[in-house]
Length: 281
Image 1 (spheres, rainbow, N blue to C red):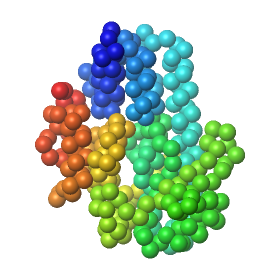
Image 2 (cartoon, rainbow, N blue to C red; image 1 turned 30 degrees about the vertical axis):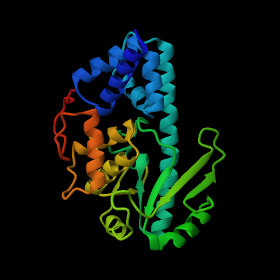
Image 3 (cartoon, rainbow, N blue to C red; image 1 turned 180 degrees about the horizontal axis):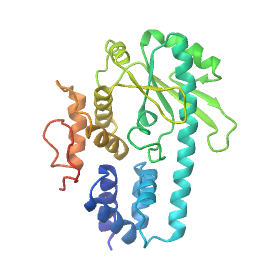
Image 4 (cartoon, one colour; image 1 turned 180 degrees about the vertical axis):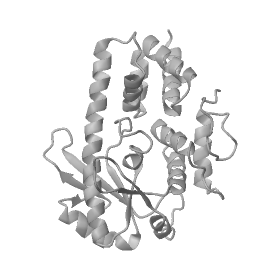
């Protein structure tokens, strides 16, 4: 098989993984991992969907795969599940301290969706904890993070805390006071006021996150500036339950265009994806 065909097999498999449902997708993924395993693994590593592939193959085994490969993927998934748990524990503690200090905050990024969209299986990869706060709460947030053992970067946008854990040696918190959806500060308090929370067993405290409509807008806006398969997978899963509210900001429309570049038969304008089968090219 030529390199070009191998790459096409791998990209089709990742696209099917990100869509996430449908018998045709299973056939696409199974055929690709059997025929071009190396290309599929390479593409999934580059696109940060290796754990999504591992979770899928754990739930939908392909008999032709060598056991060495399945053991590697299972180990990868377990490791990411542990990393996710460790970051979640830190985020719950940090947001609880912020709440006590009177600071409203929400968790963004992979940690905010790993339970609601991926059932805490370890399928969603991410490397840090993203927190959104109001611009006026920055100093109080810095004080709380210092009390939690974090140290700031030069611009105070990134905070790190060593853990002594060989698997997760460092907890990284990235602070944001704006979102790409607007580029301004004045709507962040409104977003924070509309925040909701998710309860993730076995933890007692809920994790504060954006309201569903705000979350899907945020994902699409991020997709416009950081096009990638992991965000596309988030967006598709969010859109199965939530429609982006109109009027649509330009960044949201741009993110939708990125989705349609992968799935051209999606509607022309942002809408809930109520279909189960992938819209093929």
